[in-house]
Length: 197
Image (cartoon, one colour):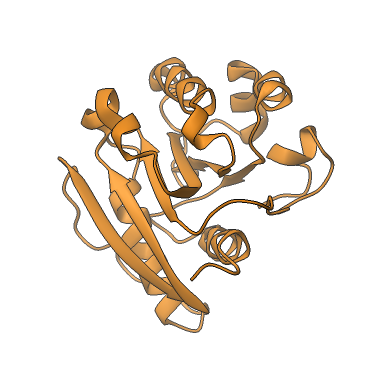
C-alpha cells in the first residue's frame, strides 16, 4: 500500500481499524475476471511462507460460480468468503457478519471501470456494511496496459466517494499473479481482524 492512498484522502491516517465491529469474516467481491480466486490462493501462499522469495507460477483458477470459503492463517485464522462476480445481484445476502470487505477492480480494463464503480457504490451504501473496513484493490498492475491508481481514482472520483462513505477505506495496487502488494493486503487483514475470535 502506498502512503496517501485511499483512506488518507479522507482522514489522513492509514490502516485505522474501526472499533465496535463484531467478530466476522472478510468478504471478497468484484466483477468476474478481476482475479479474486487467484488473490485468495496467493494470500494462502504468502501467509504460509516467510513472505520472502518468489511465489512461482500462479496456480490454475476457474471463475467462481457461487461462493468459496477460505481460511488464511496469519497470527490468527481469517475467513475470506469469495463471491463470484456473476452473483452480484445477490451479494447482499452475504453482508451479515462482515468485518471487512476486499473489493477488487481490474486496473488493466478501463471498459469495466464504470460497472465496478457502480458495484462499489452499492456496497458502500449498504447499511449492513456501514461498519466494515474496506480495502479497494487495483489488481493486474503487472500488465503493460494498466491504469495507475491516480488515473483510476480520478476516473471513478474516489476522493468524493471516500468523503461520503461511512466506512474506513484504504486502497492498494496489487498483482495477484506476481504477488506484488500481497504482504500489505495480509497486513491489512491482520490489523483489521485483530481481536477477532
